[in-house]
Length: 454
Ligand code: GAP
Image (cartoon, rainbow, N blue to C red; front, side):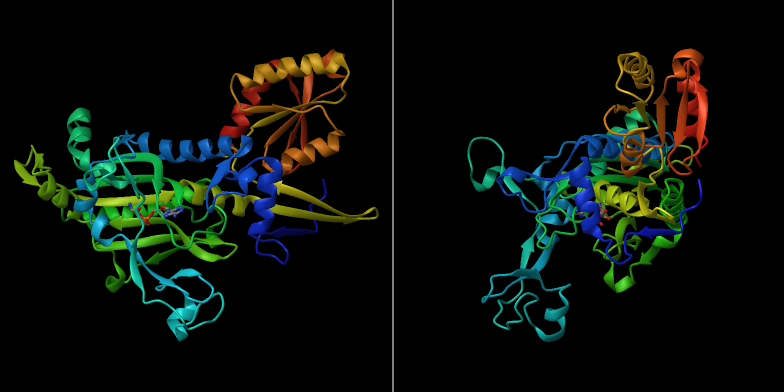
């Protein structure tokens, strides 16, 4: 296949986040939540392909963490004792300054709205008739049990991290891991964001993938730098373009109340470089707070050295939805080829195969029973090892394009020769090269090709 003359990516003229929003809806990655009722602000549902891909994103992160010999997993409850959020500082401090425009009723954040910071103006209508900024707590409140009084108030967790802290002793003692060791968790978090937006970038319900690494005080700086590097390499391994990534260290005067040092891994989304992940040195703030509020010791006893201390924590915290979006943004490309027949555009979602919703598509060349029978049998054979899709409608060229657009790395065509040679044509997504492979050997062939991708 000749190389395309031009490759267009998100951020090029005419290609932006809306390109992904419409592809996501059309192909079943992400839908607006409650769409038939007009949608619910900033909530999104992952469709047939999106749910598969999201699982793959989570699996990649989970395995990168828990297959190490020094990290254990955790799946903590979303609802936690209300004192947790007192101890963590969220009840008193997890708020954004909110301003109301009295003219057009727009609500916006005082601390990151340019027109307000510059001229005290509404970003929507330009009016100066605004309320004073007031602190708006971002935690969702609800009530536990049948009585809705102040004693029954409970919060939907705004981060998964507190589950790690309150289970520090449980995890350490049950696993018998020694410091330094980590706890990793994936789960839903909720924040009543004032300005959600940019598709799944900032939403009110989202999933976090957080890891807390407990270390001896004095070794924290070393591990902080190690984790920065480890997380950077994770992104490269799964295909993010290095020039689209950067670190943005928090200056000392902008650090969160709990942090000794912090950096954001930023990704170049179509709207510009924005935070993808936070890597934080949280010192012993959280364990100390929980000791104070619970009255329980969270000190670690270092047996060989016969000393007790409260571990410091290095945290890595990334949003699963935000990472999903970064992978989609990076993977999307339009290959433009011009020949005597005119211009042709191939849309490719060049996802790392481990992240792609389907690994293989099985495509019988014709709808005739003599081909669809063996093709369905082959589909079932492949489904023992992979997420696989079967498609017998439209021309073979169109079906290849359908799979390119959703990132399927391999298309397998069952043709009339297959009936004689018991082999099929495997077509590769990126280079569009084709190979003839024995059907009996196909699972192994795909397994190997997936493994050798990097
Ligand atoms: N435990 C630390 C913590 O939660 P954070 O920087 O507030 O730190 C970590 O959040 C990550 O969670 C962010 O880098 C982002 O990827 C994701 N995240 C935070 N708020 C989000 C939101 N409203 N929508 C989607 N993802 C969000």
